[in-house]
Image 1 (spheres, rainbow, N blue to C red):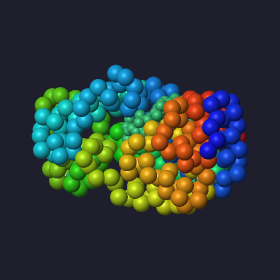
Image 2 (cartoon, helix red, strand yellow):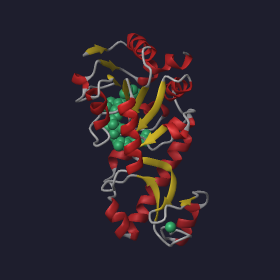
Image 3 (tube, rainbow, N blue to C red):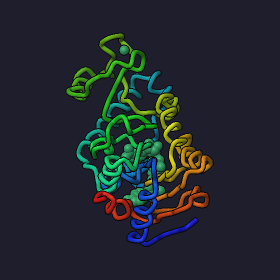
Length: 254
Ligand code: NAD
Ligand code: ZN
């Protein structure tokens, strides 16, 4: 393992790694969006850490929990919409455009990779997307326009117009199964990668955090860029310690 703590040197090492890649995959976590103003899981006082989570089975069982979930989701949505992609998101979109990066696997639900220019079909959202809602039964999408006002007016959580099922934001709640298709796509992309770069994840949330390990076992070169240490640093070839904007930013101009 080679540890680089100087951001400029880290940026150079990352550029070299991508230069030698045929098929790179970037795996991102909440840390890539903090420079866009979206707090990560650990930030003290962040919306994510302050509240106890609403488990999927409670959402399904309780109208009161559903209403609380919708309140939180609309707060988050406002935050996501107010944010703009930062240098790191833009650099990854650029690497995709040049053909270096085939796939982004993300744990984020903020949609910022797509807004940075990554084609939607090349972004695997392991934990869903917090800017869309759909029926839990028939999967019919539910437009969000006017929905917050409708919930406030009726005092009821929305139901599917097609089948009457429960409507929920398209995110994976605690206690909810991981999306099978996304897991399969992430696995296929990981197994095809010769270079696998982690950006801004504490690598503690499984099964998502299993992908860098799978890449490594499969022979890919593994790099971890994060501003604090992770449990997987010891198995990585390259550990880049610092802020992602300065480390990824220069790659936007390749
Ligand atoms: P995490 O909060 O556990 O870890 C984020 C890591 O990024 C931390 O180790 C932190 O030190 C690092 N970091 C923060 N800002 C950084 C920066 N500017 N430069 C470099 N490193 C930085 O996040 P996780 O690993 O993604 O897991 C948390 C879970 O919470 C995920 O499952 C995710 O779905 C969810 N989440 C999503 C969002 C989002 O969509 N933006 C935000 C918060 C949490
Ligand atoms: Zn339905």
